[in-house]
Amino acid sequence: MSKYLYDTGMKVAAVSVLCLDPRVFKAMQMAGTPCPYEGKIGEEAKMAWASNPKDRPDYKEAKATYISRCAGMLNKAGTKKSRMTCRREFDKGS
Image (cartoon, rainbow, N blue to C red; front, side):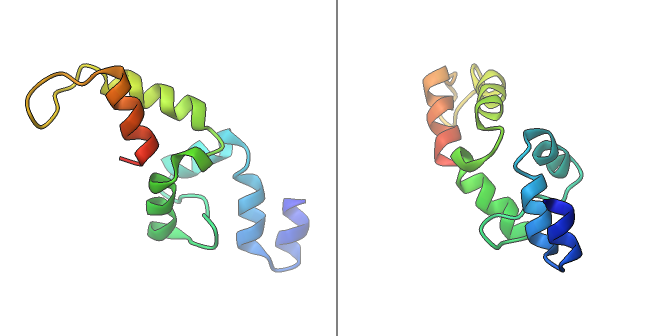
């Protein structure tokens, strides 16, 4: 399907189809070229994905990774963050 879209000139749509696969989504992030988000590309898409983490195809894995890295870190007040605080931060798009 992605190849057909690309061949008909729908390049962003072709990439969007590929980005439904969590592996492709993560690879695109690591390459510094975020997947399109509702018509946004580039830096705009990157910010949109950060603001809407529940829309990510790898949502569960990304959330678990964020929480494991975040839990125990210090907040602005100097106290350790709880796992619940980290969950809320991720879902808000921090």
